[in-house]
Image (cartoon, rainbow over all chains, first blue to last red; front, side):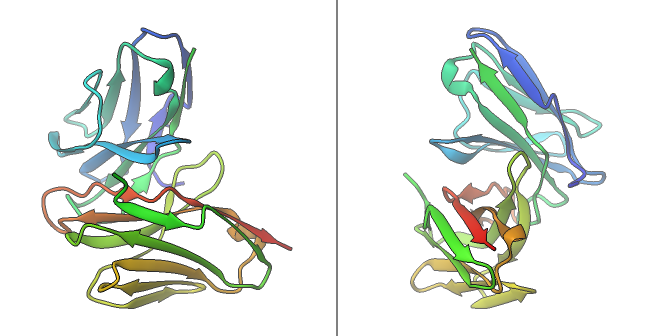
Length: 113
Length: 115
């Protein structure tokens, strides 16, 4: 158990809908990262927050957004969902801004029908 | 553009054998190279990591070899066990200790260790 929690574990929704994925980092970790894992693209970095501020952006679609709240939990919002958004979404956390161990949560499996 | 290339895609090794997974990177700004292990239904977990100021790092049965001039690094699993059967990802990041720490992952290697 990494200490990172993610909810929900599974999510099934329809195209065009909007969903919110939630992540609670390990106690004391200030950095939160979101990654998407799919069979064709592998593990891809989406976005990083550190202590409430956005720090880095990867290949995150404009339909996707995230935020980190004062209690350090983070939410990833996916809107206007398409079939191709079906994937595993992982949250990871670390103590430091860069270079520290990233602890991954168990992931949220999203299926868009 | 894939910045970290990993091979092989899959690997079958006999129990007790050595598993070797290779990665190559393009961006010379990368300065942190971790390996992650992922079991089905779980998130990736850090196995071992190296920075470019050393050429080798060993932790138990796991060793990273790093060749800065060739821009390559590899994971060696000695005395491979069936419990090592998992998918292994190499990764790289830049700006260690700086302002951002996102990881760029290889495509993964599915390792099967036969008893």
